[in-house]
Amino acid sequence: MVMEAPLTSRGSTKKAAANASLPVTPPAFTEIPWTRIDLDLYEVARDGYIVGYVEVVGAVFVALGGSRYDRAVEVSQNVTFHAAVDALLRRVL
Image (cartoon, rainbow, N blue to C red):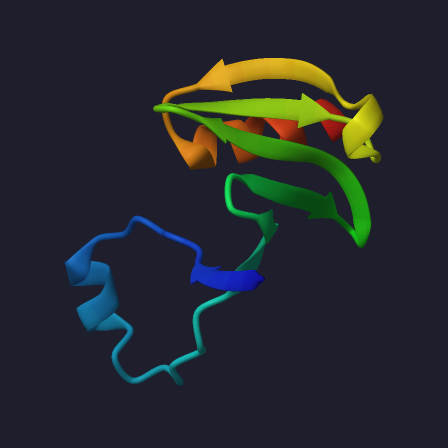
């Protein structure tokens, strides 16, 4: 599954009102690259390559780094799913 989310941007409402005559551009979208592959297992990819997996163990999300699940190594344990995905994506950079 690939979800798209708009990038957040901060700005003054006064500035937006002053630029009301400018053409409106659609918000930029960023890819959230995870795929559910089992009941408690998600695959995380970046630029088309698998970088790791997130396994749900009770109330903990375990980030496993590696392109193969059977050889993936635990990177971190997180309280939220998005923190686990972020840990895998940061590991690649």
